[in-house]
Length: 589
Image (cartoon, rainbow, N blue to C red; front, side, top):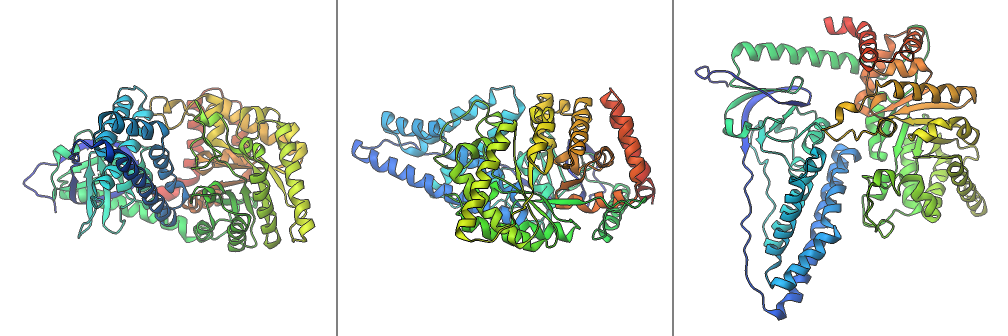
């Protein structure tokens, strides 16, 4: 417990993962590895290079195993962290430079690899871009793992704790974060990091309170000190007083009671006070995520991110393997729909494949999603056949990502028809009327949505990419994150335009992305006429509760008002006031 003889100290950081925790600290001081340096006989160099190449394979296997464990435990969204690690590990320049240095210096590979990797780390450190600096964590983590393996060390397990503790560290690497046990680690505080760091992503998934960006917290603390972590306001309170502990204890109870209120009726439909049922779907990365959607009250799957199936192994899945995954998902949520998005590889979702051999200056606007599929119709058609086969077992809908033109949509539909004909020829059952949808996440697609509507049955507005492309803002770049504004008039007007266009052409329009999962924006989206929204499973209960407090008529009036506003701040204040009116009584109680 807190030592009453010591003064309470409050340290301000960045609120990263909500919640309150208090207890004893376990401080981790990350140590540098001692890397030996020795000369090699010329005859031993080929063997040294072979050892390096074998260690690369072993390390890749380790990372893939870790990725699978995280995907099973936390879901595909969190597991994708390790895809970035594979990119670092398999970086051609880093590998070739290491081999060249071994041959040139005749030094051992551990020393050469460490030196080459450090040059990359130093180069990243010198850059002003905070996002690039943060990605340096990936390089450090992979380098450390490789060096442990080259040196024959057992991997460090930093969280072998016998009791519940709050972990304090300079930073938490992705590999270490994957070891977080929610039964032992009750809070995380770090010197470095940001809301987009890997440790924060893990902590949020495990519902572990976290505060980052504390600068020197590991120097202020020692193991067994007593602290309180406030993940709501970004505070770490060292040696909290009895009064502080009581106050936060009451806050924790209030928050838990509110969540219980959301959860209690999560299986009830989201039916507004004026009698309109508003569908709320869940997002998944594979069939294993369906249970979370259904338990939390999801009324189907609005976004099945199929690329997860293509990134979990050393090869693309076969048609049969894909079919089994799609079928399991469809059967798990019967009789509700499953919207299956076709392959969206590229950008930050890369694989170790001969299909992706060239580095791109700007992969987010490069060879990805539907562009990749249309360039590789064999891969695309195999996936379409698998999806169509699953349609024989329930309500399946096919959705194409990153459509930018009518020509792309027509070409995709042509390949789809070829897949249908191949199944007919094989006498394989499928739903001949499987609905076809286009994602609207590129501004160009929003502008020609009237033309796209003639070739599909529904739209899904992907708000994350749409906002980034509309405003030219990378939302994970801390230096410009403040410019990523869902409340920007351009964003509101674009969504409104797409919804109105869809309505004129009798096309349904759903919304996915972070905007759809934010209770502040949900009334606006339904008020503008969205058919449905799709969100993470943990957001379902709160959103459905809120919709049951609302009249659709009021949301429509809100939308009509907001679309005319020009000031982002005024838009946000209007939306928060509407939300507060709906939820005010709950938070008062």
